Amino acid sequence: MTIASPRSVRLTGWGRYAPAQALTNADLERMVDTNDEWIVSRTGIRERRVAAAHETSASMGAVAGLRAIRTAGIDVDDIDLIIVATLSPDYWMPSTASLVKEAIGNTRAAAFDLAAACSGFVYGYATASAYIAAGLATNVLVIGSELLTRFLDYSDRSTCILFGDGAGAVVLSASDEPTSPVGIELTTDPQGAYMIWLPAGGSKAPSSLETITRGQHKIRMEGKETYRFATRTLASTGLAAVGKAGWTQDDVDLIIPHQANIRIIEAVAKGLDLPMDRFFVNVDRYGNTSAASVPIALAEAVNSGRVKQGDKLVFIAFGAGFTSGAVALEWTADPARGLIGEAAVSPDDVTVRQPVDWDSVDPIPPALAEVLARPLPGHLDLSDVAPGEPEHAHPVR
Ligand code: UT7
Image (cartoon, rainbow, N blue to C red; front, side, top):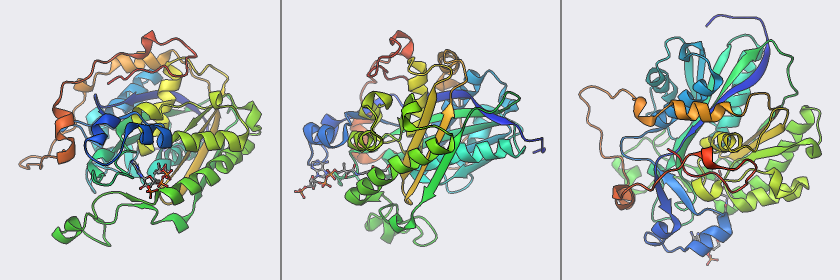
């Protein structure tokens, strides 16, 4: 990596990928003691995507990342840093970012993973901005990719209904144009360290028959405490970023919040005294995709005509740690580029190399086998979506 002089930072590319199969509330009703009415009224979620056996965080992230690169209109080898924010990496090592680098055909980027749970994409955005501003990188690919359905306990109704799979990505590029106002705020509150966690598999409790018997390889969460933290922190983190950009909240055109729960988003809207139409919402179709949720929502917002050049956007996220983060930025790219980038990359074009002489176990949780075996739902792209429609985006691969 060569060191260039400091330059301003612009978001030039964006992309997303969601697995084709959907896990509906009706499916979950057959697995645990829950019902559609409870899930919709408490969370806003109607369905979430489930990765197929051949998919991983690296493969999904590579598709989203390549789409972001095509949207930016640069060559794959113009990327000199790849950051993958994920809490569900393919392996503990190597990093998912290194697998993505190979899968997209990049030969020159540095690559690393970033762990900040659901705030990971916003932390990654901040990190990429700092690399560019410091002259350490010119074009950075920031990916949020999660395959959470393989880390859920499908007998725990308080967690298994919430999470889904997918990936989103942006390209941040150095620019000679003047810097548009950017405000970034990141926080960490370790008091919440054990409110959302995955106890086993790390150095404190390496995976063993005993940890598996205890179910410690699955995500655990104190929902109420997490909810309290989210509603307390999201608005203040967002406001801090807005203030650093030199704006007030009334200046903001669109907020892209972490899609965890519609009630949390509504509480943030209330806290900021802003109407809900200033918030982009797609939690109904994806559930909580952790680090992938903000970049998936961003790509949908832009590709469906909700964002125009000059708009003031804010990304806000919170998650395990507890972490939270917000970025306030002015949109400068041509929104029409997104559909071009999306159409340019088929998931079938991207392959993550498998290890030689090594047989993986079947990765599909038994509870999801039936869902993944059924025919795929039909898919529409965003090109038939009327600009400005809030409940617009149709599922795409
Ligand atoms: O990215 C960060 C990830 N985490 C989050 O964002 C989670 C934040 N927390 C939440 O979104 C909410 O706390 C939940 C959606 C997880 C739960 O909603 P809640 O309104 O806080 O419900 P609760 O935990 O207070 O549970 C109320 C009742 C309980 O029954 P009892 O004790 O009152 O009889 C639960 O056992 O609802 C029950 N319950 C369910 N019932 C039907 C919990 N989960 C379910 C379920 N279906 N899936």
